[in-house]
Image (cartoon, rainbow, N blue to C red; front, side):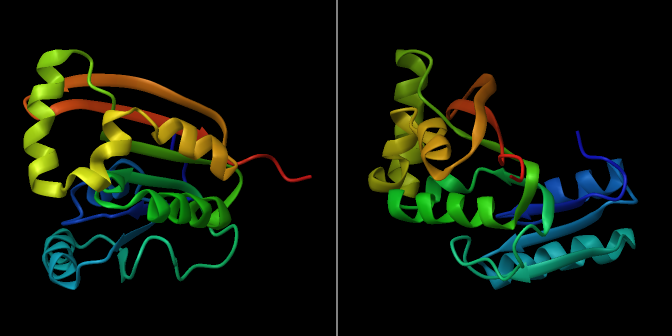
Length: 179
């Protein structure tokens, strides 16, 4: 649902794969990639430079975003939130709410509640690599509740996929209208 001219933030952009996809699909949009790892951002910068696309990259932490209130129409995040403690997930969601314009949308792709026993077993590998404390909210399917508690409206899971590492869920939420 990204429109021409909208400002989009890819939160936890990594090597900018999604960031580039967004910019290619909407060349007239203003796209910013944001990540906490300066080495990953160097890789992202090299990928972007090869394309000649105008994409800004910023480094920092997701729960202290360096952007003005109501700066973005869309915030996207792919496989980033499960790396954060619950407290930092909540702080991040509050920051996203702050930088989104009224009626702006948050779209997340991340691990969710396992669909079945096989998906739960598969997710143990992710938990062993990324930590049980940070991934516990994913296993419990709590991300939509955290989004709602942060102040988002129309929070919903829009899809889910069985993968070799567990259940990948897509979530959507909207910042309430002004007034």
